[in-house]
Length: 323
Image (cartoon, rainbow, N blue to C red):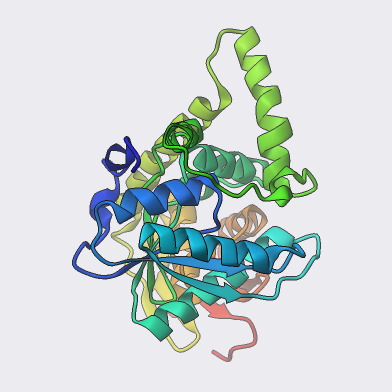
């Protein structure tokens, strides 16, 4: 059905277990439509999972329209309604609600892998968002091709594919997709980056014959992945010991590490204590460095935890937990 669908899966398609059923997050937009049809051509047991945020009065009608399309393609379709806030943090709230809904659907239907349609342009936008947020190497790695969340394996097979190629293939095959009007709302941060900031960056780079912003951001992302791997290797000699509501590492080996590796080890501790994706902010890292330079006596209170030196070990404890 899609001429280039198999080629899109060249880089990360191998991350999908073809012997197990697969769900595809399906909004009905161009990207998820392209991914769904590409995977349907090569996977024997596939389902389309749609999340209805209820943001638009015609959301239920759209879900029925998508169910009809999937029926025509011979693909099983499931839809789940979620309740999302309309606060200033609407994007993050919606993302959390989707992941929770997907995890619940996975438990209910016995599916352990979910494909997401994030592509190269999405990756570039993510890197720029994180740079603007002040993230370092850890954040600028962008979205990983595979990650485990709440018992569900999330796979992003299209991360190296440009948005334009996906849409061109759909047009050539005369396959329709839904256009979500919220994607034009520049009050949302990602939309502002896509529709305003990236075009301005492209204009400035083109004037200097320096390529395009997406390519530049993706180069930074690849460099961040390589630097992160080197930091991970340098930090791996420091073993993290889990305790009830705390983790610890040897004080002196950590103290004597180079500063970037010390910071990386602290982030490993935060993830070990709170879970994947949780990290200490730059302000916290600087507080810890200043504390270390003063001899590391007593401890330092962070937002959700406390770092302290005790019995030749460095402890990170959840806030309010006894020693």
